[in-house]
Length: 159
Image (cartoon, rainbow, N blue to C red; front, side, top):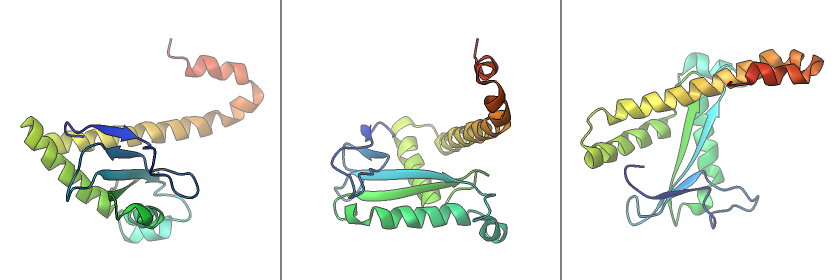
């Protein structure tokens, strides 16, 4: 995070249900507060999202961000919280888009690399593509898994 130390699933930020945000900066992000973030990737084409997403790009991601924001509202007095929502189609939610632009400014200031924002978006896109591939592969192999579980190890092997 632009040369800022961070910790994944930080202790001490648990909610009543035991859930924690995905990460936290170890030093202040802005206004003397550390940054907490929680990311989610929602299925653009799920039946529950298709009507909304067919009208407004990023609607499912933005909706997921609002849910995350409400979920972690109790932590907002002590931390800067950002909900990072993306869709399986690659569209960013409103908060994610703003956060990534802010982060890229810090990356550019730290590294001097003007293409930092593009590189960051490319990494996120690749992560989404890998997740989509894993989902499709798991679905495609499901019938095979039921018939012959040992054969799947050979198909998924990287050797």
